Length: 631
Ligand code: BGC
Image (cartoon, rainbow, N blue to C red):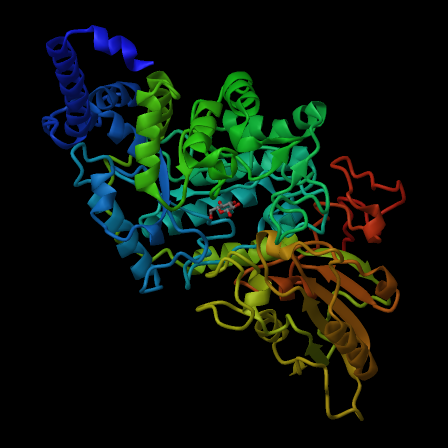
């Protein structure tokens, strides 16, 4: 095929070769120099002027950026993947995150603050000085940080049904985040758990889209603030979209059963049930949304231009930036280059890689050069990211210093109140509750009675939580009972082995439940009480006149065959660090106002229970959604 060249005179071939070589060389040189050798902007560049509008600042900054700098802003990197701190400024990385458990060496509030401040400081050394956005999952308080206030997980907040309370909880969480220099929270979850076998049930407020929309909007308001110059914290409602309605045993992840699975591709269900909560938070001013790791029919959400470009950005008029979930873009087919192209063209603006940023920048830059991604798409993504950064005041804020709000008394008091309001009374016979002053002798037992790790659940210091008693400043449910009981005799034995059987206590309190878990590791074909806990309840019944069962869990458990034997039953979800809130209700210091945020199934055949409360086999659940006795 090259034979035609023979017909061209040699000097001409040589000249053409030289021209091609020079043009290509210049092209390579200029693309490298474009990021390395561009002059720094003047110190009075408009984007540095806090008196200008967000739009003016964004346009000025964008006009100064090289392609490499733009793509760097689209990278979200897990902090442990940054081996060399200088990479943060060299690549102009847009976001850094602590996946749960991604902690600083000095795992204290000071350590967290110094780590976040350190990354921000390094990012400001880049040519344009664009601050990096540091993000965490503060989904029940600043849960990564030992010593922070741990609020009830969302399912408990859903049980309170209290919009003002949820806003206050989010505000307090935001204050603790800010004090450690972290301004981005991957919360609230707007997932709608239809199947309690899902390990993420507790991260959601409710299976009811209406309640979820209200509480989600309240959470965004509490984090971001309203009508102030800068957002307090950037909220990230998630997971767009359809999380909670995945089908059992269709997970794409071999380790899981339902998490990261398949949402049936009914557009009607997505529109009627799953979209409304997202409309509400967008209306509330959310400026970032995370897309889920699930698949809709046979399309992974992170690669669905229809769902992200058309529905979220088009129909819902979302002006913020779309962030993908952990490695979610790379789960798209075709290898890393193609996956990045598909995800970004589908509308993902910031990619939670979360590992190899060098490869990402190279791939995306060459995709633009080759025309696989348009420059307009890159500008649109970066414009959205920078707008959120300016709205957050990231360029204008002083470095975080004061840590006094972390785990403060007022935040703990708020958390205790939230716990009390989240308690749902499901059964109360023989006038067992509330416990009165006439009760003089109480026996307490159960795996969750003196276990702050269990009562806090997953996403507490470690991704999967920690089973045990270890959180600084926290109060176990047992300690809370002791504190509130005053001079009532409280005997405790975890296993319910009370030696003095000649005495029968007036009341036994069995605090039982689930060991901590997170995400798909909590997928469970039959969430129920352990044999050990059931045996403890039996032993307690032998040595106490009446027994109250307190269930500490991230979801309703299958208890139909046991409930008859119990005098009283309360669900306290995953209350967090302030166990005394449970005691407040048991002793009648606080009213029982909590109601079930999702139906409590009688058995696994009823699953899933659709968002309208109807069980799979049409039979009645053990307790319907919004059930809750009052005393
Ligand atoms: C979860 C997200 C979370 C992210 C960052 C993922 O595994 O699905 O909800 O925000 O990790 O920690």
